[in-house]
Length: 347
Ligand code: MN
Image 1 (cartoon, rainbow, N blue to C red):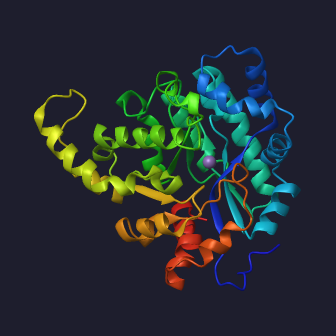
Image 2 (cartoon, helix red, strand yellow):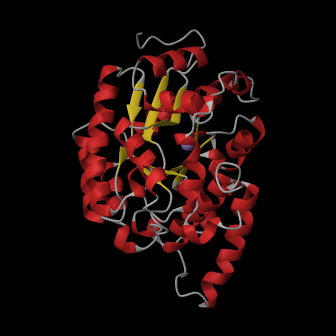
């Protein structure tokens, strides 16, 4: 395989693609058996990881591959390159000391896999957010020593969101390194999951979008982007629907931030809408639907949209044909599939 440009005129770069170290897979299975961590959302979603269902076994095999099977699946589905991240919740399931040690090992392992297929794979660095100094150090090591292209943050960590300034060291490092942080979903935290569970709405159906969208908005209203104005956060799943809410969020936040009713809400330098347009980049992971993608094109802009499949969680080889046929100019389609990812990840 070479870097030669395909006949279609652009490479398809998939930007939210999951990988699970075999060691992490064993740790997840051990936790599912022993239930030592109080994370009902994790136990609900990942229960099938340990099951013998054919779909679970296929998924488990695919997600652990950094080699032939992954490359063959990419060839079969028209994907030229994958940006890999450690699958959720990654090291964030574990306490910060263990999580930080695991992040080092998994980032090394990912970088070795990428090095075997440098024209097909790239990766993002995992880190343990509740140990801010170690998280910043590991992001910097991942980018400067291992050649990783940014960081992966899987939602909340044990119910903690990163809008609290005590956790901002990793964002400071990301801005200084000029790399993005991908804010990917995690299973819902303990305090939020119960109303979702009885109807199975806790994970990819809707829970992920609620929690990840909430996390993104907490970052916006915290003033994080006033402190680090160049910081770039990537959101999947068409921005967890936030582009649709730009008007109402900005309108209402503009009012409540002046009332003094909420100690954690103060005036910001820009409107909420501005941060969502200037500090976020949106991928369509899991959403092979031209309408919301074209909505992002319209309200956010052609420079801030990237392609993602969400392999292997959502491995649908036919989906790229739907997106190839979107009503975008050839230049904007090429930017969606390739150009923006090349710029954002410095490929
Ligand atoms: Mn995903």
